[in-house]
Amino acid sequence: MAIMTAGSGTRCPGARRWQAGLSLIELMVGLLIGLIITLAITASVATIGKQLRTTGGGINAAEEAQLAVTLIDRDLRMAGAAIFANSVATMCPSLNEYKNGATLYDRSSLGSAFAPVRITDGGSAGSDTIDVESSPPSTAGTFTAAIVKEMPATAGVLKVTDPRNNLHEGDLIFVAHPLPNTGGDPCTLIQVTGISGVCNDRSTGCNVLFGSGQSIYNPSNPNQAFTSPQTYGPGSILVKMPSFAYTRYEAKCNALLRHDTTISPSCNGSPSFHNSAIADEIVMLKAQYGVADAGSDAIASWKSASALAADEMNQVKAVRIAVVARSREPDVTAVTASAPTVFGGALTLNLSGTSVPAGKTWQDFRYRIFETMTPLRNVVWNR
Image (cartoon, rainbow, N blue to C red; front, side, top):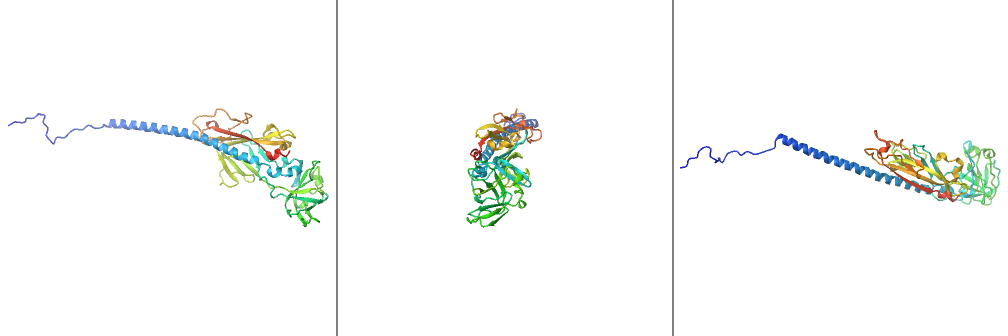
């Protein structure tokens, strides 16, 4: 019988087997490597996201600026339609107007009294404001009535016939000489304070009253209010003043606002129909008048609102605008080295007054500028 001795290489079936594992140091090293990789991936994603937002912000700024220019240009093309696109401008080479105790216009041009476009200069570091006469190009609501008897200017009465009975108390009326108005006589703005008689009776007509004590538009003595008071006899006409209003465009609260001139824009107020932000990230709006020489339609010079003389408003034939849009987010460093220029380098923008986040300047943003020049067609046809 064989005898097994201690120390031989044979193991018992139930003996424990030793297994190798990770030490604490190896585990910590692995975690550290994983953390570094995670941080690197996160930083890369953040950088790519920042680049995408910056690029997208520039594209968005371009789209907003283009939209703003398109909307303003559309209204500018219809500016002056209510006054200048019908016979009023032909019959009224100049205007007499009195209001609330003072002579507002004394043989003044219609362009001065009812400018199709009014620009308010915002200064070197501010945006300009553009008011556009925004009535539709139709004569709906306007009418004419013939004067059939000459009355003294101080009488406060006009004898007229109005086949359609369109005259009403409270109407604002241009009293005009018949065509051709070879003498260049001014029209006079009055307000109807009463009507007596039957206006649609061609045989007798009616009396249109414009008493001085009943309206702020009617002076007690036209001979004292105007240097050229008019007496209107047979052949002259009454023209109801066309209905129109001004629409205002203004860059405010980092947006282009379109609102009624009687409504004050509010950055934090609830939105309304009269005060609508129609394009975002618009930080500046600049506009200039295109002025022609007297008797011409060719633009001779471009002028800001502050440089335009009062008697030059009637010579304005076009308007040019520049809309400045800004990227939504600032870059990590200054990316705009110098101030942008507009109007072919004629004007350098001062963007130092635009609002920016704390720790940033206007140079940390990217800007897109769109410009357009719009002829005022309802003025070009009526010099």
